[in-house]
Length: 348
Image (cartoon, rainbow, N blue to C red; front, top):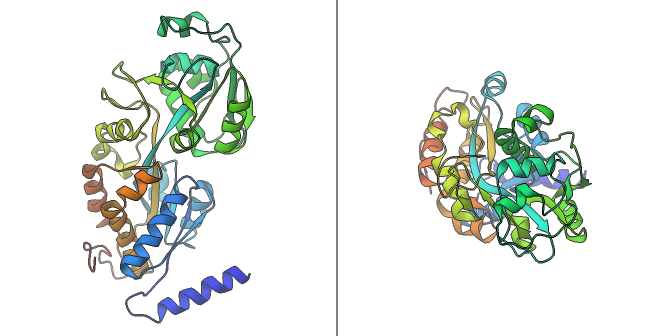
């Protein structure tokens, strides 16, 4: 209650200033929260406009934007066009990351092990049981693979990370698609569960012979050993900013209504196959035009000025050509008078 009183007081103070008609409010996905917080701090210093973002999960963000209790919602899983139309929403990608298979196999350094999508799916289906089984050995000639049982580690809670990972496996393995499918929470055929990226990472680290999946930022910051993955073009690639950007740049965003596009299994020799974007949700017709305009100012500023902050925190900025598509779509967001609330970077 005390926190809520402070928020109301802060909003009232902002309303008193003509230059700051609203405090921009958003809620949703936990994955981009550290970056959104840094962007908000820098944006406030540059413009005097405050942005309050509540890290409550993608489901909560979708619920709050639909109920119009925030100016924007955030979700790691894009909504289908039908759902967007029904709720009167528009969505667009804001920043990217990747999901990385991480391993704990004695003697294997980061980036030594090579895997393909079908082999990864068979591991998580429980069909490939040992590290020196033929499907893995055939991909890694000359690599000393132990005669050791594979311990699969997965999320025990629902998450956008799981959705991206399961979506990729569904695209490369008909059996996975039929038996497990893609969702934020799935019925795992085998393995140990860990809550959150921290839980999966901790279980992988303390379990000999383990393989799990975590967000790239977490794998990098915790110096976890990762596998190389074969992409759609048959190239083995490492997870990094360049390969995530390649996946997004080769994606057909211009042919995806409502930007409802997943970045898994994208074409391109340099593309990381398990890439994902996190999305912003806003109403197409808004009641608070000034707050929505300032929210779009925040996103515009972040696209143009936030790349360095994103990379410092191990996120990946959207490619320029995707940003242009997004900004064109913003002109479809209208206020109560029917006029577009976005007319360009006014005042920036």
